[in-house]
Image (cartoon, rainbow, N blue to C red):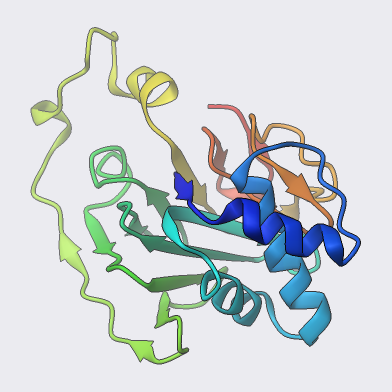
Length: 212
């Protein structure tokens, strides 16, 4: 979600360095910028995201995958809401707590400039753009499914399929082929880095992307 206001300037700089774009979206510019930071500086995905977002002007709520490290997701926000749900050996990402309450009542509301590091089998880590580690405040959601409006759909899940973006990170038994980004909707993916901002869900016991 969001919009990168200076994407045209960033795109020109990347094109001057030999980067080729397959679309005219600001999403692809951000993906290419993260890839550039990672490769040029030989740094981790987290550091590359921090460096790239330091160059960005605008609003965003993003989740990023690197095919070289499929057990990790980096999520970040600025001026666009992003919530991390904490379940049993799994995490969830959504724009608010409403779609998460079906799976867990424990959430962390990321603040502007904060980055969530989600790794299978590890606790949630939250840092800022300067890599200062923050203490995530875990809140309990008081909503229950009976309180939620279904928006005309027969049940809440169908409302989520058509109305919200939901991502679930489950315990990995088999890894999905990130190099083949089937099921990522209209997301822009290039090189090793994938930024996914459409409807998708990562199911328990696998790291496969499927349409929900």
